[in-house]
Image 1: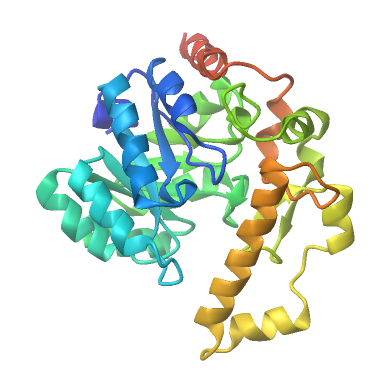
Image 2 (image 1 turned 180 degrees about the horizontal axis):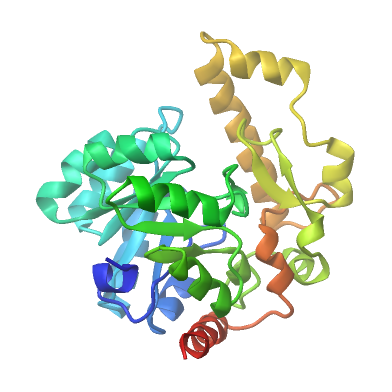
Length: 318
């Protein structure tokens, strides 16, 4: 089943949850233009703010939207955030960086769908057995935490060996590319990078301008910010910082006893660095983006970016 049929929307597109970037203005604009949207629960510091955001979106639209939940044990907000999402009955939850077992078990009775981030067939089979409703196939062209397998190969592996709908995540910047992944067997696509420079995003003008000034060749992976590979723009500061974890960071990440705490510390430190860069222009800029940055040429309203994408998709179907 394709994503548009699964959720009752016009186009098989999720505007991807983007840490620090996704906000209610972006969500409402996208929902009004035939696609669905998810935002990270971690974009809201308090439960009160998270509740207010969900209620604001629900008041503005009856279209389906979702929330991305980090289900890793290193996320201290996971349990209370899940409780809130269940109570307010969001349409779907996207799980990342951990086991979705508890989320699936609690969502099923409420009719809340669960889509799980996966980077390979092994984990896709695990979440399929747990009862997930779809997988978000995070490939090697994704922004943020990327996988290691090409879009076409990952879609092939998953569609041939799983019964779940496969939502491709990574590298899509144009409607023709959306049609291409659908032709490969995907049920839809999760698309993020091309929306970063929208007018509604509350990030700095410098971040938005960087989305225009840099291209695909400027995207690199770093393991210094979250302990996992993260795709960022190779600014002078990132180049100076380096992209490989140093010896101490490597030891902490690979020691069984210290690993949990090290990941928590590294992730917190990395999140702070990304947050500073997103909301305050300094020399120490760490801006997340994926290879689809190549297709960002101007700062535009969210609705315009969505419409361009869906118009291109419809044209490609003819």
